[in-house]
Length: 387
View 1: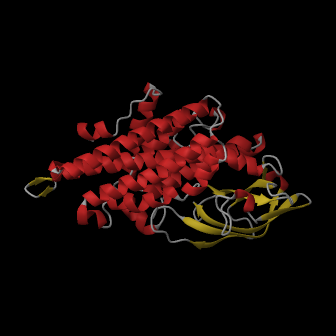
View 2: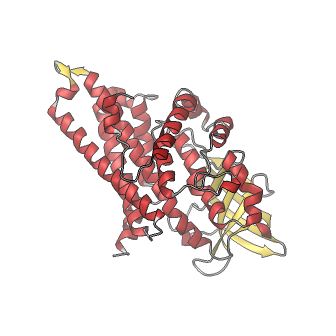
View 3: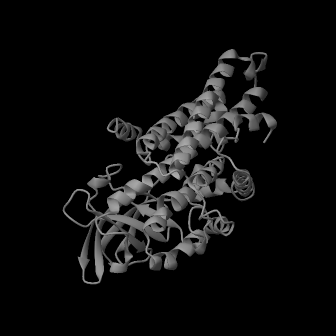
C-alpha cells in the first residue's frame, strides 16, 4: 500500500492501542498471502476451502472475544471491530462473510448462552476452525421479523423434535454446527435456540443458493424434517431465544457496518490510484474537478461513518444499550457503501464492469449490505420507535 493509499485508509482513532495495529498487520499479512492470490478459484467453486479457515483459527483469529480457557483472547468489542474492519480490506466479500458469520453472527450464540458442558464440547473446536458455524434464523416468510418464524420445536421426552425451513443461511452447505431458532410456545416471542450438528437425521440442505455477489460464500436453504436432538442441545433458556437473537444483533450489525466501511476505504484506495494513472482528455482523470470533488466528499462521508462505527463499539465495551445507535449505523453504512462503490466503479469506466476486477467485485458484493442483517427500512423503524 502506498503512502497516498494509507492516507485514505487512515487507521488512527482515539480508541486505538498498539495491540490493535498489531492485529491489523497480522490480518493484512494473512489476506495478502492466503486470500487475494487464490480467491478467484473460490469464487468459481462457491466456497472458501476448509484448510484456509483452519489456518485462521490456528492463527488465533477465530475467538477474539471468547474466554481464554476455550482458546479465545478475552478481547473487547473494540478489538473485535478492528479485526472485522481489517478483514474487510480484502476485495473478496464472500471470504469475509464466511469468516464473520462464524466469528460474529453464529459463534457468539454459543459463547453467550452455552452451558459449561456445551462450551467444553464445542467452543475450542469453533475457535480453532475445526468446526465452522452457521446461524439459522431467517425463513422464507420471516427475515428481519424474528418473531414471525414458523420453525417449531416440540419436547418429546429427552429430546426436542424440530420441523421447519430456514433460508439464506451463510455457511449453510459447508458448516458443521448450526444454531437454530425455533418456536417452542404459543407466544409470539416464545422462541428458543438449539444446537444442531451436521449429519443429524432429518436435517438436510434443501438447496444451495446462487447469488449475485458473495460468490465464495456458500448459502443454503435448510430443511428440518422431524429432526430429533437431545434436550441437552437447548442453547440457553427455553423461550428466551428471541432475546438472545436481539442481543447478538448488536455484534452482528457492528460487524456488517465494519464490512461496509472496509469496502468504502478499499474502493476509494483503488479508485484514487486508478484516476491518477488513467489518461483521458489530455491528462489523468484526477485533473477533472468533478472527479476530485466527488471522491473527496465520499472519503469525508466514509471517515464520518467510521468514527460513528468506533464510537458504537466503544459504547458496547462500556455496557450501554445502543440498539438505536447500531440500527442507525447499519442503515447508514449499508446505504453509504453502495453510494461509494458505485461512484468508484463509475470512475473506472468500462473496466469497472469487467468480471474479476476488484472494483467490480466490490460493486456487486456491496449491494447486499443494505439488505442482509437488517434491511435499511427495518433499521430505520428500529431507530424511529426509540425516540
